[in-house]
Length: 434
Image (cartoon, rainbow, N blue to C red):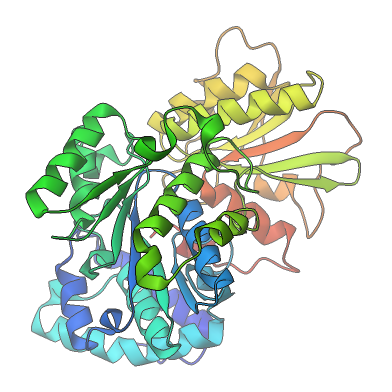
C-alpha cells in the first residue's frame, strides 16, 4: 500500500484499482457504507437514473434547491476535466487536497474490508461514492442530488433510500451489462426504486414504461409521469437555458420532482421555473466564439443521443442560413458510432475523426466505415493535440460562417477541455472511464 503523500500519487493509486478487475454489483458498497457508519443517512436525497439526461436533470434540481436557500450536494459522473467535479456542495467542487485527505482516511478501511474478503475491496467508483456521502454529511447539506453511475439495481449509489427516485430515459446502451431490450434495461435502472418511495419518469417508450409501472406496483410506489402533466408535445414543456429541445423533457422531469417533494421541503414551484433558466451544465450543446468562428461542444454518446444531435444540428442549420458545420467526432464503441456518424454526416460540410485516450474508443477506420456512401464532404482524422494544441487555441479557428461542432463521447469533450481551458493538461482524464 503506497504512502499517499500527494494528490498525484493518490490519483495513480485510484487508477490502479482498475487492475483488480471489475465486479459489477452492490455488495462492496453495502459493506463500505456499513464500515463508514452510513453517512448517506444523514440527509435527504433525490436519486436519478436513466440512459440520458441524468446529469442535466440533477443540475436543474440542484439549482432549484440552492436558489431556495438549501445547502445542496451534487454527485455526478463522469467528470469532464477535474475529478472533484463529481462531488460538489453548492456547486463548489471537491478540491484535490480534499480528495487526498478523504482517500487517506478511506484507504485503511478499504484494506480492512479486503482482509475479510478480497472481493469486497472497493473500486474507484465506490471510493468516489463514499467520498460524496461523507462530504455531504460533513458539509451538513440540506439535500443531496445523486446521479446513478451505471444501471441502477447494482450501482454503488443504490445503498440510498431517497425521497424520490427518478428515471429520466431508457434506451439501448451498455447492453452487454444491462440487457439487450428496453424492458431488461428498464428493470435494471428501475432497481433504484424503493418500497413506498415515489417515482418520477420521463418520456419512456411503452415497453420501458410498462416495466417501470410493474416495479412501482410490486413495491407500492406512486408513479408520476411527465406525459401525464405536460402531454406529448415538447412545445408545452417548460423552458430552460440549456440548449436542445430534449432539455425541456429534463426540465419537465425536474419540475415534476419539485411537485412531488414541494411539501416536504417547502419549495415554491414558480421560483423553480425561474431556476430552470439559470442552470449550469457544461458540454451540452455549449456554443462559444473563438476569434471569428462559432465552436459547439456537445456530449452525444449513444443512439438516443443521436436523435437529439440530429435535432440540434437541424436547428443550427436553420440559424446559420443553411451553412453546414465542420464536425469533429470521437465515439466509444461501434454500436454507438453506427448511430452517431450517419447523423453527423447528414448535416456536415466535413468530418474529422479523433480517438479519445480511452480503451473503448473507436479507431479511425472503424468510424469512417459508418460514413454513408453519398457523403460528399472531406473525411479526415486528427489527434486532440493537433486540433487543440494549447489553452484557448484551436487549429480550426479560422474566420468562416461554418460552425465547428465537436461531438461524441463525454471523454472526448473532457480531453479537449483539459487542453483548451487549462494552462497545462491536468491528466485526470484517465479516471473518467470508471
